[in-house]
Image (tube, rainbow, N blue to C red; front, side, top):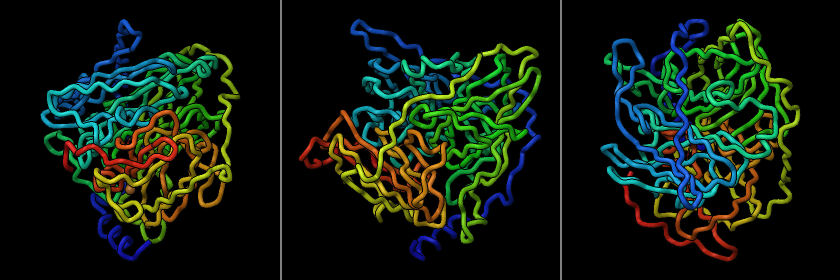
Length: 487
Ligand code: C2O
Ligand code: CU
């Protein structure tokens, strides 16, 4: 890393708010966990499933006696869960009832670039945008959120996000909990800070972005969940702008991770903690005994900070998240599968193209996002190796649109089990090189780009993002469509 980058990082990450937070055992857990409704899908005459999503402003009650101004979809905060099956043709009518432009990006989805909801697919106030595509990827937990260039952090922090659950026959054949809201639970985790009036504030900022001192799960402060089955499936989504979590349980019990960003692991991974940076997901199975209470807790995530940055405010906290309250009797769900989904691991030697991405400052390969510039041109169907290096002494992450990738190695070592499945977002500790393998299929466009970027939203907004097109063999990139918005 250049001396400049290091100095810049240090200057930007002076401690604000001071000290670390520890809420272990101190959260009252006195509100039932909100479960986002499932979006109502109407099947039209052609068999297409049509869902409506309206972005709107409203107020929410998080703190006693206070109304907080928030944004959401079909409601004041967050949005409904979209459930779809592999093979479905899905159309979403995204209506913007906000007073400003936004976009809705389908994070983790394989779909044409024009449907992706990135910075080029702006929805102006009063307008409706209707992306449509065929779901063709494995069962997984995905999510949606705005991606307006320069405004993503603010829009997400106001409450614009929702979960997507994809199902397929392979997952359906396994004995896994899948009754939504009963034994299959969305867990959308966000950290917030409130001002004296009870409004969201981002006044506590470090180099990684806005760090809050109060957790919301599905928009609930201090949530508990009444559990009625002996195993529960939690779909953990880090929908925070900057904070990294390491999710485990208050008594240190092990759980089984069954899926990463893009779907099922080859087999369950027994873990005591799973680190998730913004945008990452993990599905975990937790066993409960009758009558017990145990809390989902994030314990000081290992961010890989070094001597230069170990004092930075990167949210290195311990936070109670969600209390699970087991009923006096629990319905047994039977033996959970020991094998989940076949996973063919690609080898680096099979990749025919290698690209390098160096993350430093607020740039990738020393360039900041330019909506008029295509940075990379990928030929459809090619197995590619992306060598991604965080050369700074500060945290970053890397997210790629349209694709699920495999992590071939991290600093030369094979990935741990929780990173050995399909991923679309990965935390990049300082001074670390990741080798990713990926193949873009099906959809091509010479002019409409997909994005790759750091998913620390303040970095993304600052321009730590690039654009790529997927083209047919031998084609060259064209010029991206004219911007309809300026950051
Ligand atoms: Cu979750 Cu490019 O975004
Ligand atoms: Cu970053």
